[in-house]
Image 1 (cartoon, rainbow, N blue to C red):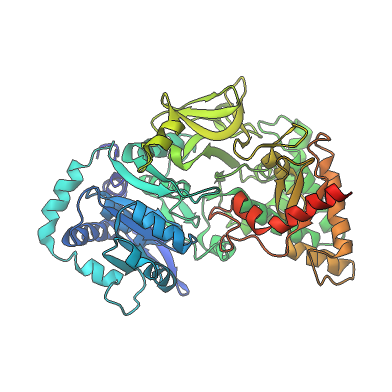
Image 2: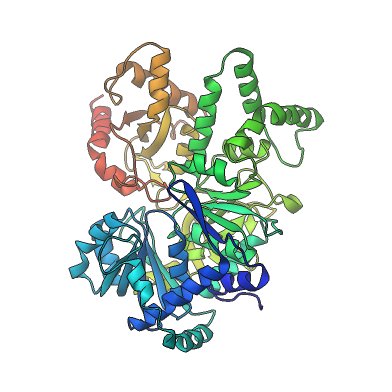
Amino acid sequence: MTTPTRLFDFPYHQLTQYPQENCMLVKRGSHWTNISTKTYLDQANQVSRALLNLGVQPNDKIAVITTNNDPKWHVLDIGILQIGAQNVPLYPTFSQNDYEYILNHSDAMYCFVSDAVLFDKVAQIRNKTKLKSVFTFEELGSLESWTSFLALGDNLEFEPQVEDLRKAVRPQDLATIIYTSGTTGTPKGVMLSHQNIVHNVFATGKKLNLHSNQKRVVSYLPVCHIFERAASYYCQYMGFEIHFAESIDKLGDNLKEIKPHFMAVVPRLLEKVFDKIVDKGSDLSGFKKGLFFWALKLGERYQPYQANGFWYEFQLSIANKIIFTKWREALGGQLEFMLAGSAPMQDRLVKVFTAAQIPVFEGYGMTETSPAVSVTDMRNNGFKIGTVGKAIDDVEIKIAEDGEILVKGPNVMLGYYKEEELTQQSIIDGYMHTGDIGELDTEGFLKITDRKKEMFKTSGGKYIAPAYLEAEFKKSRFIEQIMVVGEGQKMPAALIQLSTDFVLEWAKRHEFHISDMANDKRLVERIQHEISYYNQKFGQWEQIKKFEITPDLWTTEGGHLTPTLKMRRKEIMKIYNHLIVKIYSAEKGS
């Protein structure tokens, strides 16, 4: 078997090198059910025949929308790609308007959804699109089910055509169009070739130091996101068992069942895991509680390569035996590392989990770069806390005069679908203008400082980098989410979503009841104390002078967050415009 050059080559490589009985596993009820590598490819070929039976041709577009990750998504993906068609994955949290826009913009012929809720959502706008059918993974009693679709592939007369089309697909051909979840503006269709993603899979894989195929991984981040999708191709290539979590809410229980060897994480998820661990430590008493927080403070001082010296390493070995071992057990007991991407990670979390023998390797990238640009690596002094590592093979990073990160290499997208002008504005002389602001140190480590579009000036002409501020304030256990505002205003301010569980526990400890979390005087004073404490790290012009507590949770469903839990700043500003007006009208009146 030659080295894979197209995305559908990965499972074929697994079949010839180390066919797995437990290629993919999903929980149905109380039992984990598996499909083998052979079954995976047999079904993918059946999908290809079914698509040809429906009249699908090379370069036709097939939309796929799923609530939770499922083997059917991957079966469908390979079946689509190997006949030269393109997979257009969509987030389940997109609005109906987004679905209507994307399905039309992408020229999608068919759409596959995972369940009745998504079927109804698409059905309401279907007559405004060019969709010929909408198939469901669930059996809903309709004719357009997964079973009825697969039955179209029973006709083996199409098999020679499948083989011919598979051979005809070139590495440089378009594989997928991924519509950005959109922290701002209309979703853009990022065109990625087979070559874009395949190169990224191998270049990132070199940074991970994994060799044996006897590994288990958990898949729970949206597979429509290129971060999770590229990881899945890597796992298929390596022959790892891929276990699909039931949901993010059940991830904790699933980790104990699966006992994964590594997992991909986004910063917000790891922050939540950390907060839960600290909450449990806070519930301890006496000597045990003291021991817990001693270990935690020790972890916060962690530096790689034994830079803290013998005495620190000796203390850390004790902390690992009596405290951090429980952390590892809570995450399944087998985790060798976590790979973090999608947004900047707090240095403190990298230090603490790495000290606890669960290293956090940060990567940087974006959908337009397939996704990885750089990754940290514990080998060869490639791990530096506060950075996102060095560039992966064949990728060049440079910093523009205004601080913007520019990227050149085989990972850079083909362009934005039907947006030639926007493509030319984004890729200049082969360099992708990322929109992120960063620095390269003398050793080649990349540090992300902010988003170019998110930085703003106050009325006094001072630049504010909100992500830098927000990362610090989110260290407070009272604060679940915080967004810094203040463009063109006298000073920066913040919208805050509190950590409800912790706040209620805090109120209980202090024996008082909170009826209105956004306006409770005693609570607001306590949050002001937190803000004042973290403000000390910043210059006078950067410090948060005013804040408002939002009355509800920030969710993907509510439009506050993207599916990977990043803030949708424009949406949040619209939703809470009255609070922003309140902050600055009070300031003018004072």
